[in-house]
Length: 456
Image 1 (cartoon, rainbow, N blue to C red):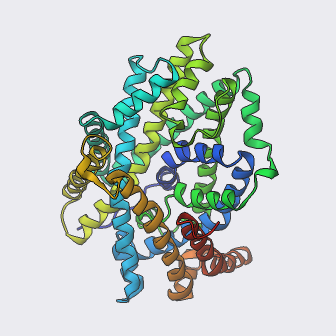
Image 2 (cartoon, rainbow, N blue to C red):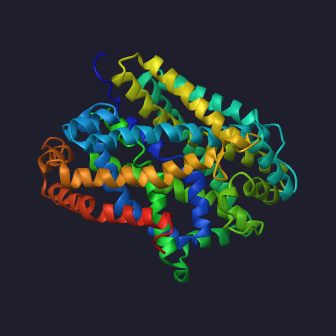
Image 3 (cartoon, helix red, strand yellow):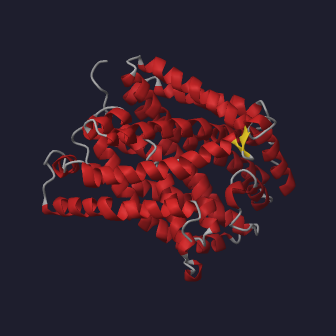
């Protein structure tokens, strides 16, 4: 199989891993969760959840991945030593694989909206945008085609390996994503009445604070950092022995929060400018926002056209960076466990996830046979992975690292084989261990119970 690849630079590590975390969870889910949960209060709790829950969970996956220097399943298997704990790795690979299939459907919608924006189809009254999205998502051909196209683009990146594929693409895509974000944020914040949107994001209304907001922020921090999908563990297997895991996790969490807040600044000033309610829910991106951009820049139609186009290009790039990491989880698994070439492994994953994506897409349209208990296959994939697999894998990983893996192994990885032995790092290690043993499992358990209505 040859010597295992590594990322070629510290910048490559940060941009690639941040690309895994920065995706539709930040640009799509975070804004509508913020809108539904009171704005600034939600953001403040979210940032605290990232620090207390997200970073320790991220470091835990980094420790497993770098220690194992293998795909997620094998990395857990090495640490588990023949015990059932090894199943966590296989569950992580399965989770990443299933998410790739249905996530590609939403990513394909983003590409369709890029084309629609480019040729000027995103113009009309609010009802037009609702009808446009409904017709697109239920069409038996277009969404399937776009799903295959974006998975094909992902394949072209993954087949070139870690340095020439993932790292090189991340160094191009992530800066481009930031530039587009800043352009749209600037335009949105300068709109008349946009200051109300800025106030909504940064001036907390403590009357909005309740258990629902707190648990929503906990869940969002877990979702947007790509925890328990196998992505972080797989990417960490390409880290060098000199990569500072704590610093890397902190930098990635900082980038994640920055992108999420910028996404809010991109959306809410424009929404408030035209009097659109900020709690529009999941439809915010595909139904509400095209109408918002059209109304907000009505006096400058060309500006509205450009902003709408740039926004959906941005959304597509965010989707692609996350798809890369999700795809790599399964590709690395097949490549190493079945001992086939990387290109063949990547092709197998692309074909299988395209089939899953096609069935998920068709379940939203005319294929009534693809519904179970009245719920579309697409929704089942979202429910099973997001509300069952992710919390379980995250919970078990924390228990595994905190209670099962010998502490000298955890400490060795945390301190880069003892090279980071200052008093500050030793203190941080003990804080990390306490969080992973007690706080993180409890928080994840609360999320799990809340999602099933067992905790109000």
